[in-house]
Image 1 (cartoon, rainbow, N blue to C red):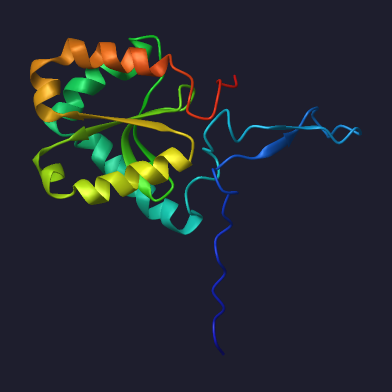
Image 2 (cartoon, rainbow, N blue to C red):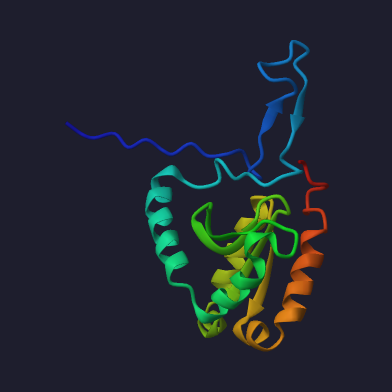
Length: 168
């Protein structure tokens, strides 16, 4: 007997969802379209990939690169007033750092990224389609200009996401 493969449920284009105005539904039928306000987090990862990616993300969290460790020391525990997650799964990727509330992803680019500019651009395009703004820093910037990096992160986190204002 042939096994039938089911396709994973995918969020609507842009990653957002409409939700009822009131808990339990609103008889008026009005909804808020959140697709332009916050990125999709709950349904952004393919459920079949998520299990594997989650394990890999945990491994990466336990063994960060030197630059990731330096930057995480500045970001963890809301030290700059913004909550960040480290090695977080979004769509089919594990991003270095992510603030859901600010819709901001921070990527740390080591030497390997010089040879994968096209792949990085595609990754950024997909993550932006999910509703996030992606900013990148080189290892050199983190090693030698950490205060400037943190200042830029703080500035970017206070800007509304591409699709409009934040929803809290």
